[in-house]
Image 1 (cartoon, rainbow, N blue to C red):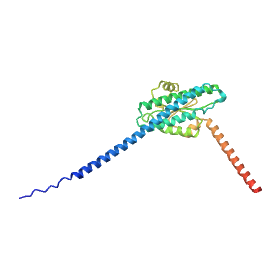
Image 2 (image 1 turned 30 degrees about the vertical axis):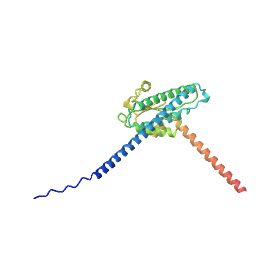
Image 3 (image 1 turned 60 degrees about the vertical axis):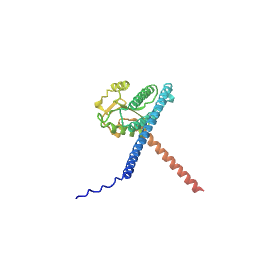
Length: 252
């Protein structure tokens, strides 16, 4: 007669402990994920608030500059604000994976209008006063339409960092904005030509290197010479100072 196998009693305690440990791990992972998501949302909200404040500040500056006299005009009056806003908006774009986010699109439209206003103001002041701002209009699209636009953006960023005097206005052609569409129509920019750069009366389409862009802006040669002369003068001044100190030490 066959004996029935003896079944071991179920260790419910072990199962319960394993269940709670597994649940704790999942809860911890969920909590960390929520914490990171909340921090990311807080960072994006902080950037959004700062952009809104900077936009209001710049618009106030526009109103002030409309009344400025030519002797007080400086072509770099607003360039730092424009560049600062561009950096913050780029940070917000990189932090937000949803490119169709309504709030992001709204801020990009607002920023585009701000740039157009700045461009018009600079053109008006240059006509009234004896100075020529160095302005670049840059039109770009998404990766599907313009795979080289990202690389072109890096080149322009480098140019702006090297020459703070250069005013770079960047426009996303995907934005449905009537003022931007008018600007594109005036300059005859189509999506098949992206990336497109306008410098003065020159329109350049397709990717261009840093040196290519520099060669299209003769004012940069003047700025390079001024910087070189200033560095030379500072070196001579430093050398003279060291020589004078050495002479005094010997005479003592």
